Image 1 (spheres, each protein chain N blue to C red):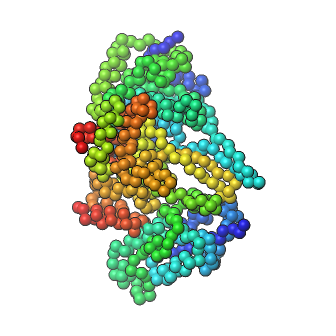
Image 2: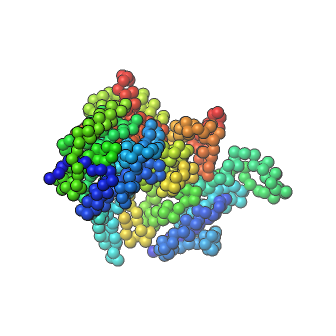
Image 3: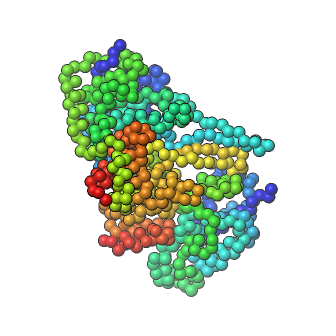
Length: 258
Length: 370
């Protein structure tokens, strides 16, 4: 049987999610024996226009050229999987959607006419149909292996939608919100990271995006009880997954709350 | 054979030594990451000497004082549950040979003699319920059974219930029952040491190695007084009777929507609950298709996946999930296990990030007619 052809593409992003492939260690050797990588610029393999079975997309769409390229990739890919907060939820650069980006460009660049960007930064799903999304900022190797492993075995990958709290408790980490009053986003955030931040005493900052049934109102009210004001609560929802409507709505609601 | 006596605090190490000489790995309470947690106990000095807890709905803090006592606190986030019902563990593996034939292999935990020091009455009651669930007749859970077999339990009667505790009302504490305590040793802590009592044959033979002194009348009085104080210190309560007849008439009560508006549906309550046993099973296949590992992990009735069946999620919203949790724990458990699923430890109150209080919710549901 012919090996599945795979491509890893990059859009507006920091390149960190692609590292989840390169960080696989020994599993990378096993994986490359199973698949045929046709395009992966970060690993030195170039073949952007090749037709593939699975295209992994990192990054969000922020320029007209991005827009044209993602449509071309979609046409040549049987399955399209987004990896990371930029591709799935806009990323940090999408915060410009909430500001006057043209004014910033004019203030920063001597010749702003050379800057060609779209009015809004958008996640991939806003432009083309996406078959599966891997969340995280960045995604980790375990997620990549689980998704690719499932697909190679002919199974739909598991969409991990539970809250970070579930994994935090399985790791027997002590809740930083209850024991230290830290403003943790774990109760509304999607699992997948292994509760990395709370395990090291840091509050979750929602880099995996919204979990299923996220109660942003109740969490916001609790953060207020911990001493945060409306604007600070809004900021909690405006991280790398700020373009997710449920977070954007919560941010706009809390921004108006004193 | 000695079954009762006084052990001065400076000789507590003798108990650990006797357990180790009998082949036990000792775990006990320690202060770790701002909470009392059960971990491997290197020596008696590692016990949380002078530590007190302060708990409220959604809040847990530790404070230190010069009090010499090592068990003057109410429970932290976990006790026995993770040692027996592991948060995540492999159940079996399957391998595919060159001809494509599959072979399955059960994976069992290594049998280990484990002594847990400092277990509370509520946790023993919870253990009894977990036993009822995991060790039912011919359908015994092999993983749980393997760990349960090697367990030696040293209970310490609770002298400092938290504000969130209500074990008196559920009938599960704060003292371990005099008969059928479900443990091996029971300790009452006094300022300069412990009154030690055996609660099993294993406990009695261990106690004989400790060189206990006779218990004085004054010590007996101290113990009786502090037990009484621990009972009287509790302010919350939950009826232990079968609440199904009541809850069945409250299924459409507006309080469920009210609590759902506050609830994060995060599963913290069920994860810290010492009796909750729900779990999900998953497959972790090798990328080359040569083998797969089947594992289970703690799940919760507060997750979407918990009520998912073939394209339908039965409990899509938090109102239905909270109702499921409460009506099961306080109602249907009576049918399944002959008692309520709540032992009054109060963990679900303290460790709920938004401080939802099960006793308050039940009282509100019981008070009004919808």
